[in-house]
Every structure is written in structure tokens, then in C-alpha cells.
Image 1 (cartoon, rainbow, N blue to C red):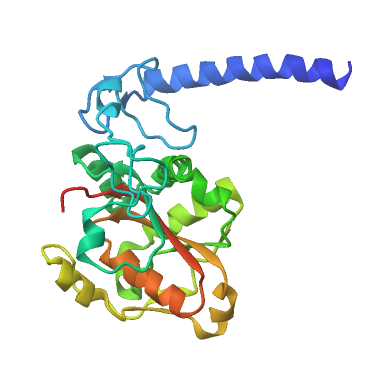
Image 2 (cartoon, rainbow, N blue to C red):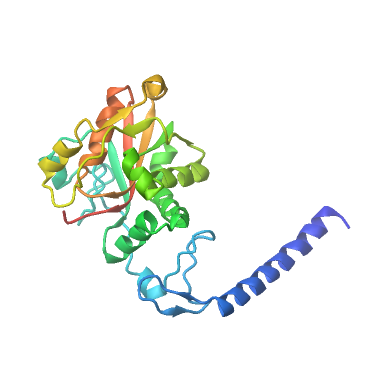
Length: 268
């Protein structure tokens, strides 16, 4: 039997076996929606990515607010009207100096996206990196089409890294690198000391809080000279942290720093 015939037979057999296994798993280990906890039937489970294990009913999935055009080309903030592809307009640009080139966020930070991110960030649900990064890749396809040189995560200070046991932004970088082939550097950029929480701080206080908190390993600084970087994080609130990160990266020679996050707070 030639290889073509064998392949044609193997594919439907594999598909049938996969469906049988899925049916047995759903019977003995039914899933609940992570948001409303409704029991999910196999046909109503939103399968967003084959490796995510993110289970949402259709009604809850519709609550995810994806940020789509029109949006400001620099800040990534959504606009009420479409002013054209090169529109740069955002209230934050009037209130602070920013060092990044462009920001792209996948979704608005609401109750559902908060729950997903918190499970990923604090609940050891590291498999969610597949879903989050997949959606981020789709949202920022234009970033990757411009052939960036490196993906770099917003770093955690080592004390927080030990406590949490992983940097969620580094996991997103690893997954994005797998999708795109862009090199990921999780080790060179670091946070020198643990800063107080940004929660409850004003914009100016946030900027002051993270000023000079980041650095790049000296022996690796030559690697980012004249390079284009995508800086990756899970959530962006005011942009103070990512702007400070971009400032340091450009200080050591990076020519462009675009910021890619999963969720963006729109009403800070």
C-alpha cells in the first residue's frame, strides 16, 4: 500500500479515535465554565485553542471585549470613530511622556479577562499562556510582520519570582516565540529591586515608583543595539512600567520598542 493511501486512511481513523477519547473524557470528567460555572456539554464548550484547557460557555465568551480597529496607532486605545489607519490620538499621550513606539492590547480589562489573567498569573494555570499568546499574536500581527529581532518580557524582581515561581510575561514570550520564530530573551532584562505595588498610585507616583528599577545585563547589551524589540506583559494600566522598560532598552541602543499586552485597562 503506497504512502498516499496510508495517509488517507490514517487521518479519518485518527480523527474518529480522537472524538471517541474526547467523548469519554467529557462523560467522566465534565467541564464547567470558568466564569459562570455552568456545566458544559461537549458541543457548547468553546474550544479556543487545542492546548489551552480554557473552558467558556458561549455566553461568557461573548463577554470578552476584544480591542479592534479603530484604535490609536501609538497608544492602542480604542477610538469611537475611524479616522484612518495612521491616526495617533489618545488622552494618555497628553498626560505623560512615553518611550515606547506603539502599544497593542488584545482585550479590554473587564471582570472576565481579570479572572482569566488572575488564574494564569496567581493560580498556577500556566497552560493559559497558549490561549493568551495566540490571541496576542492575532491582535499584533503587524508587529510581527515588521520582522522584530527580540521578544523580551517585563521582568519580575527575583524576590517576587521566587514567591510566584514563574514570570507570567516570560511564559507569554516563550509561547509567542513558538508561534512566530522570533527569538525570546527572558534572562538579560531584569528588575533591580522589588518596587511597592502600583495599585492605588497616581500616574506620577507610578512613574516615580518604577524609575531606574530596570536594567540590562552588561555583557548582553550589545545584542539589542540597533534592534527592534517587542516588550511583552500580561496587563497594561497607565503604561508607566512599560514606558520605563522601553526607556532603558533604548538607552542601550534598541531602535524600536513596541509593547504587546493581553489586557488593557481602559478606565484608569
